[in-house]
Image (cartoon, rainbow over the protein chains, first blue to last red):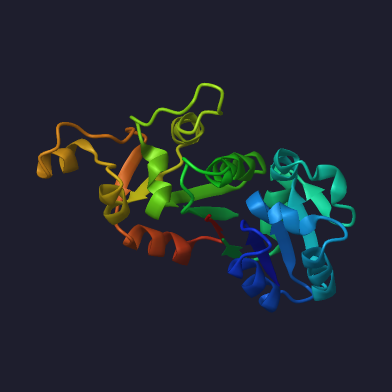
Length: 96
Length: 130
């Protein structure tokens, strides 16, 4: 059970590598340029959905990118939520 | 729980370094403690006392200084990275014949052993990069 954090564009190698390791039972928090992977209806989002992992997006970063109202199905969290995720998952992998 | 943070993100690009500072504050707010924040590579820029950021952007240095001064959080800059990025304390400035130090006194220069020590002794290690 790993908390993955992705701070990289969905077009990056980091995204592809992260996707390869994501399994059901893991959580993925999208931040920075990673928030674009949360966009409902895009192909990268569909790939994340099929991984079975719980999907989260950092509120401030999604708002800054202008995608906050287009991430249906992904749980929006603030910093407190990020801390809570780190409590629940003993390991974190940072992709960037 | 006891946390340690590893910050590799440059404070000069993107939000991640400041997300790390907000995360640190959130960790403390939820009743946990932080053994150390270790800054590596471009992350060491967080300790700059001389960098100047646009006035309409959020402060990059003060959130870290507040964590150190108000909560006793240890802020360690990887010394090998720091020197390459021009982050010197007074001792290193003297050693390398630079006019003066460039890091804020809330930060200290430390070896990688401090990162290993933190990783081996805490409940949660959270990294910030990119």
